[in-house]
Length: 504
RNA sequence: GCCCGGUUCGUCUAUCGGCUAGGACAUCUCCCUUUCACGGAGGAAAGACGGGUUCGAUUCCCGUACCGGGUACCA
Image 1: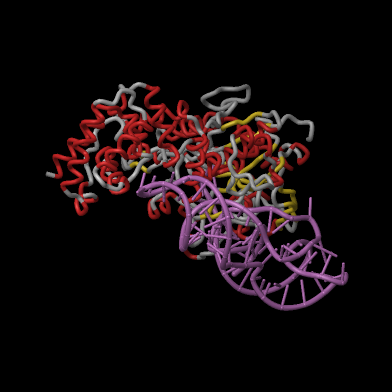
Image 2: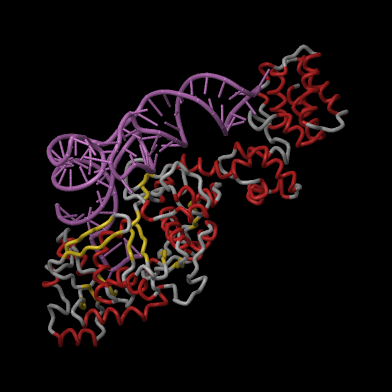
C-alpha cells in the first residue's frame, strides 16, 4: 500500500458550472499528487444520462486550465487507463454486478421507480433495506424460475447490494480518523440501473480499482455512503487494495448555515463558479471568479486556505509553495463559511505582488479598445503606478482608464464651490509654463506648479484637487504629477483647457 | 425520525495538557497622504454547555445543546 504509486482522481459529473468547492477538491487532489510525485486523473462521471448537459465537460477542462490544475490523465488528455468517461466504460460494470449477485452479495430487483415512489409517498421513511426487501419484488423473494423468466423476457431490473446483517464497518479516514457504521442502518443501494449504467456507488469502486487509484478524496457529503463502497471493495477487490479515503469538509454559505450554492452567490453578489457558466437550456449566464476579476493564483490561494493551513501565519502561497507544504493531516474536519471579502483581499495581495509585465495581458483585456494599440512599456508603467489600488482586475478600468483616453466625465461639482477667478488665472498661467517645459518630469512639474501658486498667493493644496479632477475626472488615482508626467504634455494641457471651458 | 460528522473572536484559523488564548479579513481610532488607496501604530472581539480524567484542561473521555451532511434507478 505504502509503496504504491500515488494516483488520485477528481470525478465530477458534468451537469453545470464548476463550483468553488469542486475546485478545492481538485486542488487538494492536485497538491497531494504533485507532492508525492503521483498522477492526477480527471474522470468524467456521466452515468446519469438524464442529466447530460452539452458543453459542461469541456467547461470543466477550461476551468482547470485557467486554475493551472491540469490533469495528467483524462478524457481530453488521454492516458493508459482510459476511457476516462464512465458512459464509455458502460460494458465494464455489468460483470462486477453479476459477480456480486452470483456470490449472494447483491440481488436483482424488479420494482419500478413508480412503485417505489408510491411506497415512499405512503411511507415517508421507507428505505429499501434488509427489512423491507423481504416484501419487495426481487430475486430474494421470487423463486429462481420466475427471476430467470423475468430477465429473459427483458423486464427492467436493477441490481442492489445486499447489506449484511449486524455488521460494523470501520475504516480510517485520513482527516477524521476511525469512522464506523452499522450495516443494519444502511440501505440496499442500487448498483446497476435499469438502463445498464452503474450508479456512482459501483462505478467509483470499479473505476478506482481499474485506474489504480491510491487515495480517494471527496466531499463530506459522501461519508454516509462510504460503508457501501467499503463493502464493495471487500467483495470485489479486497480491502488491502482499497485506496485511502479522505472526506473533505464542506464550504458553507457566509450567512446562516448550509452548503454554499450558486443561489447564495447570486443572492449575496459574489461568484461561486470558477468561470462564467451559461446554461444551454435557459441561456442564462452565471458569473465566475475569472470574469469577476480574479487572478487564478489568487483563486487557488483562497481555496487552499479554506480548510487547510501550514501551521504558520503564512497566508499567501504560490502553487509551488502549496505543493511543498501541503499535507492531508492539516486539513480541517469542520466546514468553513466562505468570506468573499477575504477572497478579495487575497486577490489584492496577488495583484500587488505580480509584476506589471505578467499583469499586462489581463489589464489590456480589461481596458479594451482604448489601450489596444498603446505601447506596452507605457501600459506597464501605468500598471506599476496604479496596481496597489486595485482589488480586482476589473478595477484597472477605473484606475488606469484615464491614461489612455480623456475622462468621459469630469467631476466639476467637486471643485465648483471653491472656484474663483484667481484659480482660472493660475491654471492659465500653468498652461503657459507647462507649454515651455523641456523634460516633462514629475518633480519639475510639481516645482513649477508650486512656484506659480506662490506667486499668485494661492495654497498649492487648494489647487491640487482641481488639477487632479482635470486630469483624471474624479477624486482618485496616484500622485497628480506622476499622472501628468505619464500622460504627457499635450494631454495634460488639453485636459486643463477642457475643464476650464466647462467651468466658464 | 434514523445514521454519520462537526463545534476557538462577526469570518478564516493557530494551539498536538501549562494561555497574559496568537495571526489574518472585516470593523473602530490615530499617523502618513493637500485625492482615493497603499502603508504604519493601536483598540474592541473567542474556547457551546454540563460532567469526569489530571497538579493543571481550549486541548483527553462521556453526556447535552446547536449546526451540518446523508437517508434517489443524482452525483
